Length: 278
Length: 300
Image (tube, helix red, strand yellow):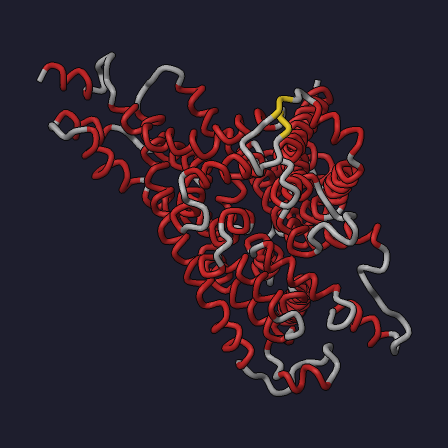
């Protein structure tokens, strides 16, 4: 018996080691980057790029941070404004389509799914012209609007499914007790789908933080660029300072990595659902 | 009072409440998402250089020009097709294998799943810069590793053959797409009723038999979805090309999205750029409907 459990433990350990090794190989590009970012310039340029860092330093991160801080702030603003607002207006539409019977309901549901099916690329030029006419090129407001709108199809889909899934008995008794439709929505229905709203918000956070194409199309002002587009500016400026660029890349990805590690299960489920719908 | 009761009473035929709820999302979505799509189709029928307001109606001439006279259009289309095919071969197969492997829990399975999926949520900017860094002939991981292994005899330069650069872009992209394919298959595997698998175990089917005869046939729907999603994704590719090569060397790594983008925002050919974007959309819709048709034909 003792022998059996020892060999069982050994096998478990071997399996674990192999899994870790595979994971390490998969993330090797990331570790190579981290290794470079930790090297002081002296070590970086005198020795082979391939060697493992000997005297790790955070100086590259500090230098990169002072350069991309402003872009970081812009990305954070984009997320903080457009994600909650996008969830809110999506929940309004989702509630109407889940709770009321209206003419052409199925058509409307399909209409809102269109945005997930067709490539956003088709909209770039017309939206550029619209933004130009509205004087919203190169403004934060322009990006807020676009990020909000382009998250509507996904959020509405997720939230409508949630509203359909909860029992409407409480809402109906509240209506009988004299609450109006807005109170029923805001005080009863919305709080009940809050967990799903938060998960949708996480996915919107990822998509807004990671956006590149809207940023480069609608913003030219260096001071208003989000971190993805700002990073490319930073690369252009420091083509030779590889050790600083690598640190910049890692800093730009940090919020996403943290959010992902904290809410992995929800993010994976949500992404699979979104893709299966599209 | 009676009027109010009618308009806001959910039981009434004239209830306007749902329309009030729908107003804001419907208006925003229509103005910034649906209208631009329609307007883009309209622009594609005009010659318009973007400098003035003057548009000249040319019918389908922009489409004809791209198909007959623009060699870059065909480079882009071929690259999108290469992207689809390589995606179906590499990350999709790898994703399926990983989904099967990670369906059972074992020590380290969580770490492995997290690592494979992490690149999916990283921004394409970060992924692109990272892989430029892996491929770089001076500081890059691959070249330095080769030199180290071979004592300096072997070397690697991803730009040495311009025709192959697109392959390196697709490989970099496969790194982040594998995790996506994996979770789509994992969702499919989870939806296979466990009673079916348990019955197979009782009947004495080996793990390999269960995989080939039970699990894979049950995954047919999932496979359909994954193929369509993969092709759609490969035809929408833009960011990675923009970050890693900008369409170069020459114009060899253009895809339809990057060509459309350059045509509009660098060459100010609004009509042609819109025509390219719409052809990309039409090809994407056509391919997905062909795949769906093939799968349903096979089922009958």
